[in-house]
Amino acid sequence: KGIKKRPAWIVMNRTQGLVIALAAAAVHAFTLTPMMFARHAAARAPLRRSGRALQRARLLATAVPLTELPKIAVGVSTAEPGAWSGDVLAVPLFSAPKAEGEAEAEGDKSVVLAPLTQEAELLDQGALGGAIAKLIEAAEFDAKPGTSCSMWLAGGASRLALLGMGEAPKEEKADEPAGALGASLGAAVAGLAKGECKGAKTLGLVLPAKRGVTAGGVASGLLGALYSDDRFRTGSSVATPPKLSSVDLLSPSAAAAAEEEIPEALALLQGVNLCKDLVNAPPNVLTPQSLAEVASSVAEEVGLECKILERAEIEALGMGCYLGVAQGSKPGEGDPKFIHLSYKPEGEVLKRVSLVGKGLTFDSGGYNLKAGPGSMIEMMKFDMGGSAAVLGAAKAIGLQKPKGVAVDFIVAACENMVSDRAMRPGDILTASNGKKVEVINTDAEGRLTLADALVYAEKLEGPKPDAIVDMATLTGACIISLGDKWAGLWSSCDELASALDASSKRTGDKVWRMPLASEEYKELTKSKIADLTNVGPRAGGAITAALFLREFVTDKTPWAHVDIAGPVWSEKGGGATGFGVKLLVDLATNMGKPAAE
Image 1 (cartoon, one colour):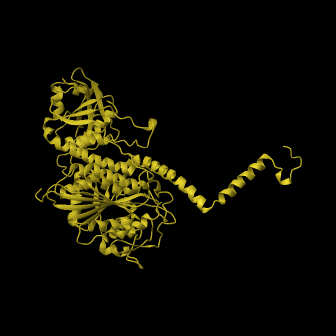
Image 2 (cartoon, helix red, strand yellow; image 1 turned 60 degrees about the vertical axis):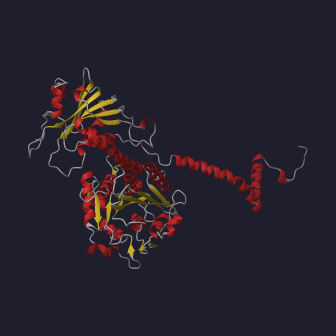
Image 3 (cartoon, helix red, strand yellow; image 1 turned 135 degrees about the vertical axis):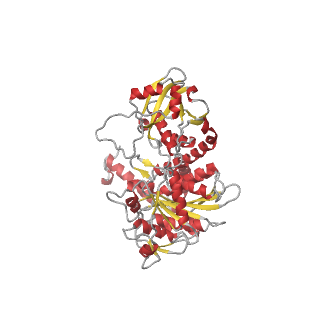
């Protein structure tokens, strides 16, 4: 106002004024002196640090949420089944056996009613007054696996339920996993609690006098079947847990053994569930950092020694192959973490065993990127399945506390990522035993991390290990060979391979021994410019992977490699299987027993 004649540069509209103001502010910002900038940054730094610390604290508090066992009390009752009172009295029945060689005729829909077991017959002729037989006839119950039927009762138990178990196992089948029938029976009870009798809070289960029915097997089968991973679901997607709060196993003869069987079985189940939780966790939640934190937490919970090596310590040990894989990750959460847990028993140590697990929390393939149909890049969170099995075994062994065996649990945790820092095809890496490895394919990274972990396992302080077993989701070739139910087993020692085979039969974690074929295929792992290549030709890929690992354990130490790429995940079940935990726990526990046992 009051300026009648303005210079041309002053005449502007509001938009032009705003532009000039912003330009002036920008000029001011870029003319800050270094001293002014330093003062400004210093004033803001504590706020940024405290903000980052708070954000990190929040992340770590929920980094890897873990599931818990259902709060269902399982115990043995010496009460007679007919005198038991509660919501549901469950009676397992078996299908009528077929004659040897008999096959079901096509289109035959006739029903063969389930016969009464000895326990069911005594109960039916006594307290139940024929109710079981009447229910079988009314429901046309044939006891096929997964079937059930029920009826209301007057007095005592409120409800009678029959559980179909299929044909009874033949007694001569000696290689059946211990407690397998009990586990199936527990799973049937879980199905009943989630389905036909979902409102029941108390249940009495009549245990049949059959081989393979143990109190521990039933308890782990029941609680294991109720495993539900709802950690990353909300609202109606979250499964509704059954109302069941207690299960009485009605078998006076099982009472004495149950005191040891049930706690041991549930300790093993906790290890299996931990394995499932880790494999199921997404890679933005389960990082090398958070995997190390889980390992530390497990060690504190069950009384194991824990050592976590950081990058500087890993470098000092010369683990060039491991660091080569890890160098592509973003510094921070993606930094490599070398995990070493130790279990030492009370009393005399008869054997020492080292269990080594592959710990790639995510595998992009590196510069040899997993791409295209069938690459399974979206599933590469399960590439740490070996480490999950090893840490699950650590938890179970820490809870069970077996005698006579010292166990080391070793994981070289990292990611295999693409970045300007990542290893390239053609790089040559130096392992901690001095061997030079030419990187032909960056997607053959797991064996590189295992190489340094195996060297570490053999060089442990104190008594040398009597055996080293590595477990890894190592090759797609093993899936092609054995499918998704069997793991491949390679070993330099027949005695160790036999021990693993025996553990496989006892636990149901199936392994199949494959040829190491050193004479025929060892040359395929050789490099023309270094000692080794990290991948061989396409044919025999699972064998050449095992031969590569063999280079990092001396002939003096029995060694075995278990490739679990197939059975680590169930496509049908939509999640982790927990494979490997039972196998490793059984192996270690039996190694600690005196030879006479």
